[in-house]
Length: 145
Image (cartoon, rainbow, N blue to C red; front, side, top):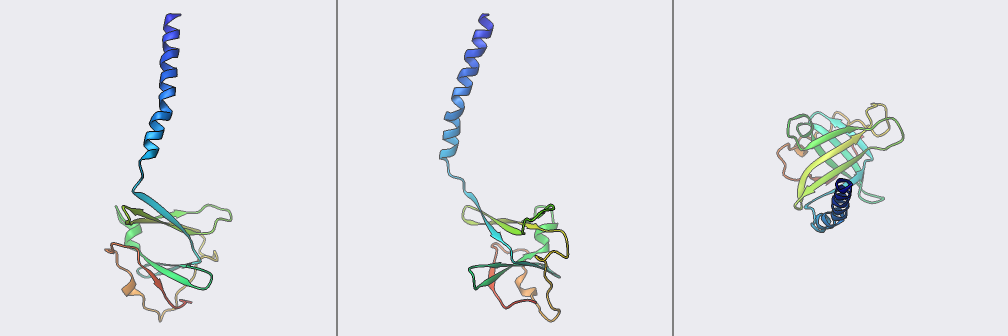
């Protein structure tokens, strides 16, 4: 009986301590944060993905994501395939200590999904793709289709 009573006291003490540790952990601010960006269109290009998104109602902005970020070990990007359903593609940009860290591209795998676009052959965007870039560059450009 004494053993059961002792275990009960220990369990109550441990459970009571959890909120104290949780409050202490919550008091520290994280230096990592993220921004979710709904995507208008994704354009595959020979050097990477061109992602179109809206800055406001009138302006379409583009960001250029090199394939190397997604398809190399320790790259700066992840591709997450959205399952079946009505989820629209989006981009999550992660920052650490105030600077760009990595990006996650949530896409629809179906090539015929309306979120996928195509770039006309005459457009040369090579200069925008830099796998060694320290920041995620955002550009205001002309339409690609």
